[in-house]
Length: 602
Image (cartoon, rainbow, N blue to C red):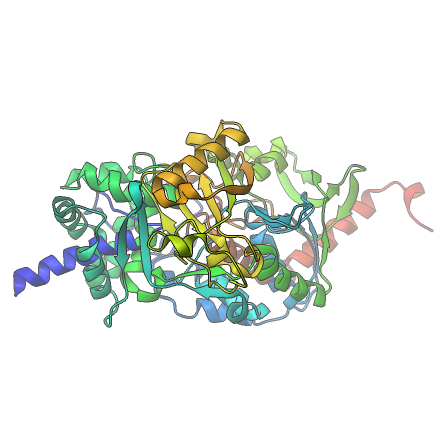
């Protein structure tokens, strides 16, 4: 019985890793290092508490609650996001936010609720950032990626509950993760089981068709010796071990103590690509294991949801309505041209006084400014003088990955492989997911797109069209990015037919490609130490975005966390004799007193 129990624990750990789908995680060799030695000690402004929390210059309790080991076990995160900041500042700040992606909009929600005047500036003609969507001239909804909501998106779910979109706009999927292999062969991780994690994961991994018996054994051996197992009994100890794994790749960690190449090739590479658009040889072990922790301790973390409609309709429009009801002004097609700032006698930036916006470089002055942009955006926005601070200079060490999102419309149901008549039948009203095929996120190791879905089934509200069939949406990584759009479409159709041979009888009736040259930041080893905090050395200048420091990845949940954290940091700094408002008024008075007498209004 003891041997069986030990094996079960090891297999449970293995299985959880697989659960992560779009994000899974492994662990590292420096498992025996002491608490605090996990790659962040190179940041002089960050310290770790006895509970594994990085504190440093974080002022607000809200921001502190989003980081460290405790944040993984904090069941109040959803309630915090749903209920708002819980206070109104005594002094009203005028706040400018550069970027209207998810992080910027979430920050604006909290800051408006705290009583501040907020204005946003977005370079694109629509909001959403990397989660944006829009309609073409024919009414087709276009996206810049495939957006899946994992059950551990507690902060984002809280925001959606706050705007009234959670119950109405999300469609929960069966608790199954399906791999589609060449020839239409399926390998599933079926987590539907009466008992939750880790048992549900154990049986799913034991039964999966995706791996051969030998690879299952090697997975159990390697993952059974991972920090995940320790975390089941000593969560802080296991999580501290995970944090030490950022400097090696998942492959390095996985193969050190028994993991097989076959497991990487047939399962883990698809997961790594889905997580960060890089393979196991190039993704950080810490990145994978961090998310794996959530799947190991919470059954619901691996449950998938997808929007019933487009991100614009299902996610962004309710947020926009919330912001407009609170008088937040959103300026679209309004690029920020310059951060106007002051320098001290040593040439170091001390405060931002405003931003120059648009083709005419109109000056907008603010008490505080948030740069809620992505990695390429912040690199373009920061003045050269800011790089004198190591925190800003470190950002330029962050790299990004290119992706190409492909949409293919067919005159039948591509993923329906059991009934040819059903595959060909597109007659009548087949809305609300009633079409033929697989209504879930899919993975493949035999295609250049690691994850894909039939949006006419998974998100039928705006993607199903009567009289038409599947709308396959797949995301190609950098292996295909350099090809022309026509070639990418041709390759996508060929690879779809390879995965679903019966679909060769169908015709592709419409296609679209959206290339994003710089999407997620590249989760390669050694990157975590370069991620900046939300508060910066420039007293009234703040950062937001999923690349900024928080204990999640570059994802919708990471963006949401960063938005809540930056809002908490501003709210905590707003009031008092040394608060942001007082400093802004002092700077304005000083500027006025320094003006020549003939420039003073009479």
